[in-house]
Image (cartoon, rainbow, N blue to C red; front, side, top):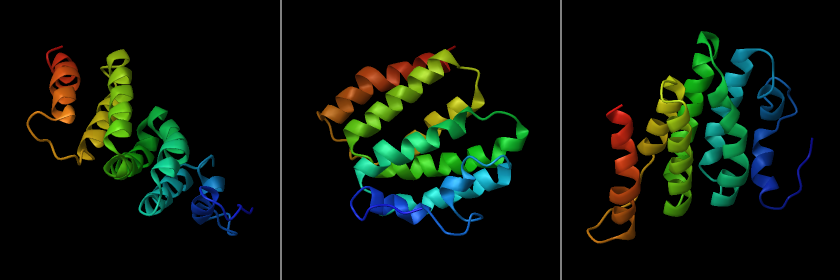
Length: 156
């Protein structure tokens, strides 16, 4: 397994390993849940130096299926994934953060009783890192779009 030396591939190469026990791409699809959990944990280490392009176009799509896992045996994998999601959210610019949050709120509207979906929204919100000043576009978006939707879920 080799990756070209160009971005974004060079960053994703850090997830690959000659040892199949450590290789992210081998373990993320493995039948054993502890190997998938290990793969998601390894992804967390690659978030730090990643560009927004790598986070948005590659790591988030690789992470998203983790949140559709159900059952008690996947608890650790989902929990690890939530931590990675928060780390990714911390690094996203406002426009990408807002899209991610809006997508999660849309999923929540469809599955309001699903605890994992609620946790996904919480993990994204835990990664909110913008400075909100009076009169800013961020404050306007939060008060006109995000907070009313969240209040709607709380009053159901």
